[in-house]
Image (cartoon, rainbow, N blue to C red):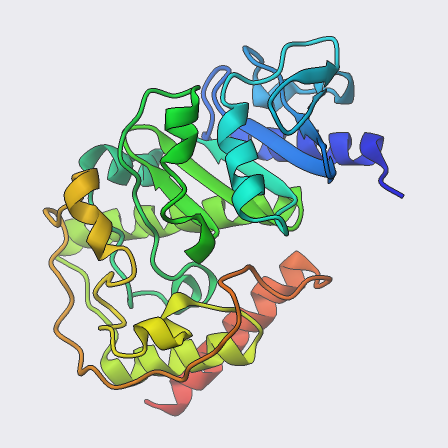
Length: 293
């Protein structure tokens, strides 16, 4: 049985993390959790995410109509609902404005791949949508070309949206992405970004599959792609205005087939403790990389 009050407490905790991280200034951002086929818990509009209380959380249906709660639901709820409609296994969505990832959203700069092992395992290719005015269905529809192949999306000139099996996992992808974007900016200031080579990049994809993560680059459709060149979402760049400006393209990788999987592009194995999972995967990635030195 769903404990709605406990889930509301979890939403408030993630709201505090978002605010403490500087991912949501003033009343920015919104968080939802789907608790039944037609019920979604939703944070209120015009309310700081750092000071939420369980009683502030409203309930909406899958059309966006508010069916419970003393405060008006977020104006951007339709974005969340569209993700739930496209990915029925998803139970939570987090939208906010992490500054480093949002800088990439404003610049329309693609996120470089094959740089950090943890990012390859956890995120893969990260798309950037076209811009639409927030709040309406047109805005919600901007995620549709990408939502089945990733668990985190950059919203052009806006922020990020990430999603997962529960509210902590939904938030987790955004925190990883923003930390990575900050590292990329710092590396750029130091002189540039060095990319992993074909062999080491393929090793990470193999480990990713072994540990229960999926990635479009491990599917038949993309078995001959350049695994480090943002090939998964490149076809969208012309429409979305994405273009490499700040970061050079990685050196061309040989188009050797990857290990093909039929698994969908979903998030990690359910039921694992988040902190333990991060630590275990980080240690194993670094151990595998050390073998090749």
